[in-house]
Structure formats: C-alpha cells, structure tokens
Image (cartoon, rainbow, N blue to C red; front, side, top):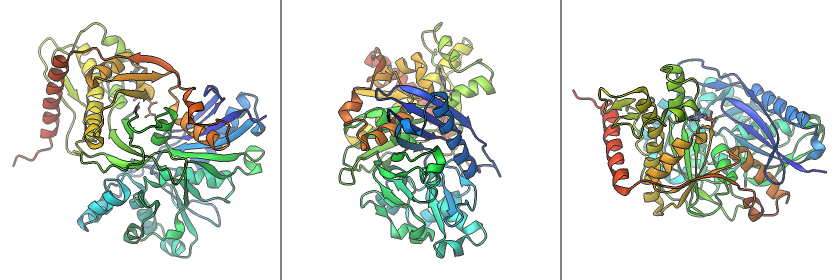
Length: 500
Ligand code: ADP
C-alpha cells in the first residue's frame, strides 16, 4: 500500500527527507549537513555530487528508520534552496563546475553592467525581479565564461543548466528528465513570468543557449519516475517548488491576501496575490507561487529581511550573551520594555523595503540603566520591526489589509517574538503545530497530483493551530514604538552616507 508521501527538502546547509502521512503528520525524518565551500571572500559554492549523495542518503535512511520501502511511497515532492546554479554535461551527467550558491556575490559586476546597459526596467517588467547577483542568470553566464571549453560545449548542445530541483530530478531519473517548475524558473532572472516562457532578449544578453534550459511545468504534475536503481523501484515525482513558495503552500495560503512569514536566519514574507502579478513600488519582488495548472497561475509578492534569527546567533556566539537561542525569551520576562533602546541589525546592509547595502548595525537609545536584558529584548523586537516594514510595503503594493499572518521557521518557537509581532503589526499571528511547512508544501504538491489528497480543502483540514497570538497593544503605544524604530533605521543608514 502506498500510504505515505516523501518530501525531499534540499536546503542551503543541509539535505532533509521527511515522510508524511495523510494527516500531514511526520512519520520519519532524516537530515544531513554538507560542506560549504568558500573559494574567496563573498564566494559560496556547494559540490553538486554531495548535494545529490546527501539527499539520496537521507531518503534511504528515512525509509529504513520507519521500516518502509519505496512500495510504501505514493509520490515524491521536492523543495529546494532557490537560485543556486548547476551546469552539467548531459552526456556524462557530470557537473562542469561547483554549484554557485544564491548567497554568492561574485557576479555583482555582471549585474552592474546589466544595469548600466539599461536593462533594469526590462528585468523588473519581464521577470518580476530586481536585477541582482542573487538570481541564477549571472551565475550561469559566469560559469560559461570561466570554465574551459564551456561556451563551445554549450553551443554544441552538450551542457544543461538546472536549479537544485532540476539536478535532483535528473539524478533521480538517471538522466531521463530535465525539468523545473514555475516557482524555480521565476527565480532565474531569465523567465518571463507573464508569458510563462524563457525570455529571448535576456538569454541573448547573457549569451545562454535556450537548449541548456529545462522544460518548465506547474508545481504539481508528473515530472517523471525515480529510476529502479535509485530507491529500489519506481516512484512518481509529482511536486516541485522553491523553498519559500513551498512554505506558502504548506501553510495553506491558497487564497489571494493570505500571507506567511518564515523566521529563520533571515525572514521571508510572501503574500499570495492570486492571478495578479503585482509590480512593487516599494522594493519587493514579484514571483510565481506554487501553481497547479498553467491556466491558473498564482503570483506572490516577496520581501526578505537579511538578518533575523542570525542576530540571535550573534548574541550567542559573537557576544556570548546567551547559551542558546531559546534563552532569549527568558531574558525578556524580567523587563517590561527596552527603556528606549533600539538595535538595527543591518550587518550586511538592509533588505526590503530599503535595499541599502551601505547601512550598518546600529544601537541607539542607551542610558546608564541599560542591561543585557534590554539589549536582548531590543534584538528580538528588531526582528519584528523589520517584518513590520516589509508588511507595510506589501500592504501599499497590494492595496490590501492583512487580518492574520501564518508563521514558521526555527525562531517562531519564541513566544515573546510572536506576541510582540502581533502587537506591532496589529494582526493575529497564527503558529501551526507543524512548522516543517516547507517539506509539507512539497508533499502536498506531490500528493495532490496523484489524488492522495483529493483537493485543497482536504489539505486545509490538516492545518492545525498550535498557538494564536492576539494583538494587545494600544494604538498610541504602537505609534510611539514605531517612531523610535524609524529613527533608529535612519541612524543605521546614516552610517553609509558620504559626508565629504
Ligand atoms: P534556517 O532554515 O534559515 O537555517 P531555522 O528555521 O532552522 O533557520 O531557524 C534557525 C534560526 O532561528 C537561527 O538563526 C536561530 O538563532 C533562531 N532561533 C531558533 N530558536 C529560536 C528562539 N527560540 N528564539 C529566537 N531565535 C531562535
């Protein structure tokens, strides 16, 4: 009996496999970290073979641990770190270079040139993205320009490109299938998110042959079957979505106006905008959300905060103020506010809606009475304020008011963080009992295709609330606090100003 669905969750620091049952409960889970390669400052790579071997390893271990085999698995769903770029030879199946990871900044000069060449508006209009080295396009161009013979091989049709989902499917099917889904394609900066096709003008600009690109399909459809030599027998691969879009789906944000925020290293806030691709006026990107049908495409607005949970790690490892991240909540209990202290963790500049690469971490409002507790609380509050800024931008772009926000990610376990978020946003914050929403989203996409789950309603019944945080702050108090935050952000941004 094929009673379970397998989710392969290929993240930036680890590969995970989670096996779910029909209720969306976790039956088995395995995780393996892999090497981060830093060839020069600001450069980050992964070994594609290690991505594949760690992913296959955890899939086998998750099956074994639960006493299952491929015969128990209805279907496979894949979710992945987005934008990370792999190019391999389709005859040998071997990568010609390491995977260039989304965080890698090596191609910043290529993007500067793109902007100088007048392509900024075109990129925004066509791909929904703000031109940046973060997306795949410039990474593909870099590999083709810097690996010996790569251009020739590409022109001969021997090389192919994929984001991590494509690479996994290629290996699962032993080189029979070269595909991706709309969500991943929409992060390459080569895909026209309105026409649903690779864009010839951008392909030409980056000198990338169309023959290298995968076929793009809806997030829930039959992509192929795992080869018998891989898991022991054939299992249909029926779901693919990039991690943030998978989480939006796993949170059951199926309707226009529904949003989720993931509190991890950074924060990723996604708002489902239905069939409308809204162009942001406030520094957000427009992206394709997990869609089941090419005639019914769902779009989302996305805003990212660079430093969220990472600031708590810094308190722990850099300042040694905490033994572990969850202790931060205990420190908030003995004080009722920060006594006017604000911390802006702009360690690497500020993301949406500011996009200020020159801002730097800033602490303001110190008085002689300031204690460690105030500093820790200010750090947690800063995560919430940053989410407030992104959400305010979203509300203006989408002209809608949010009534509730669904949350996930490691830091959403912190009750203080969630209550202060509800207070400052003045919306209810809903924390589900399963916070593995990324993997769950991939599983749902696969199981919807095979009718393991009948429809979205069937899935919605699985969403279970663990805790609801209700706003409990006066308007005057909120406005006073936000005014202080805005002043603190101004100070953080003033650091980058050239006063000569
Ligand atoms: P990622 O997937 O980005 O690696 P996770 O979703 O695993 O991140 O969340 C880990 C992050 O959340 C870390 O940066 C950690 O500091 C933070 N974190 C984890 N637990 C808590 C907590 N209880 N309070 C505050 N921050 C936390």
